[in-house]
Length: 234
Image (cartoon, rainbow, N blue to C red; front, side, top):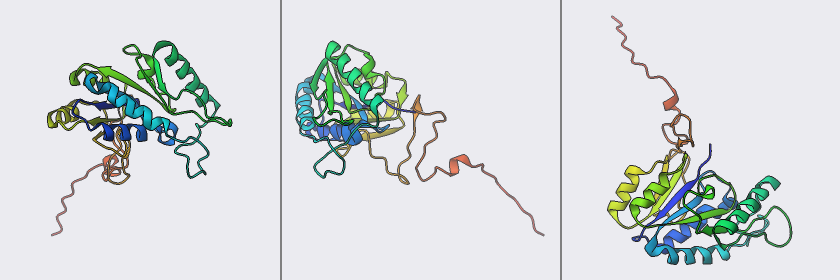
């Protein structure tokens, strides 16, 4: 049921960890996972510095045949996905700024470059609709409160992440974020990485239908009926 998963980066973040986690989450599997980070929401004071880190990391990624050990990520699934990518890039070029990517590697095939876009108008559809391609938007905000409002201003509520070393910001994020699976300072993947059998995978809002979580240790039990039995034998 999809997701449009945000990673919030505050002024108190470790920017190297944030950049690493965002790129891994956004572009692994060419962005073709429901939990992929497709939105970055960053407080103004560290926007430019984070954006440069994201640009440099993304530009260094190798896109190619998954059988090639040097390739970081492979093709998108079909021609429709590639067309969706092309349309998003064209729209971003008209209404925002393409920071890196936006094209296709040489050699043909269903390959798309990891793409980062910023300067889109508030509430732009590219920050609201799931694309399922290697495409991430970066939204500049004035404050942490504005970041939280932007993170929740979507129909989806699958995964979300934050990078901050401020305990109060982290606590507020955990209290207010409208998502079923959340991560704090996860360098290995800003909005991805739930482990089956250990962490439940829950979808809120339009990312789910029952709010029940799968994959966790209580997955089967939640679909069963409880019964209390009292038996007198003599």
